[in-house]
Structures are given as C-alpha cells and as structure tokens.
Length: 88
Image 1 (cartoon, rainbow, N blue to C red):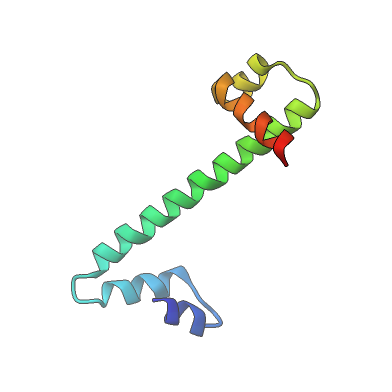
Image 2: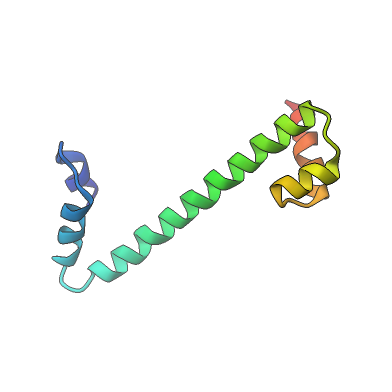
C-alpha cells in the first residue's frame, strides 16, 4: 500500500480503496488498521490544538476555570500544561 501511494503521482482515495479490495479478503483488516490510524491522528491533532489554546489562554492570564471550560480539560491538566511551559 505504501508503495502504491508513493509511486502514484496522482494518488486518489478511490484507487487505494480498489487496491485494498483486491487483497483476497485482507482488505477489511487493512481498512480497520487505516481507520484506527486515522482516528489516532485526529485525536492527537485535537490534543495538540487544545494544548495550544491552553498555552495562549495562560499567556493572556485567563483563570484556570475559564480555560477548563473552553477546552474541556480538567484544571489539573491545565496546570500540567502550564508546568510544561515553564520547564521549556
């Protein structure tokens, strides 16, 4: 799959799906793996975005409670991110 996506200059999702379905029954397993990787990537991106909001909010001296409400993170997590900021 990596070869196919790297070798094709006009890579399209539909073409990849066709290749996956051609894998003698293993396509579903590969799709599950790809979907899990996509889910993890989205989670990681969301986490990084929340961290950025926390850092910017702390720089603006917003209260922990407000930052917690905005991000959905616990106050303890906000304080943990603040501690990371001071260590860097």
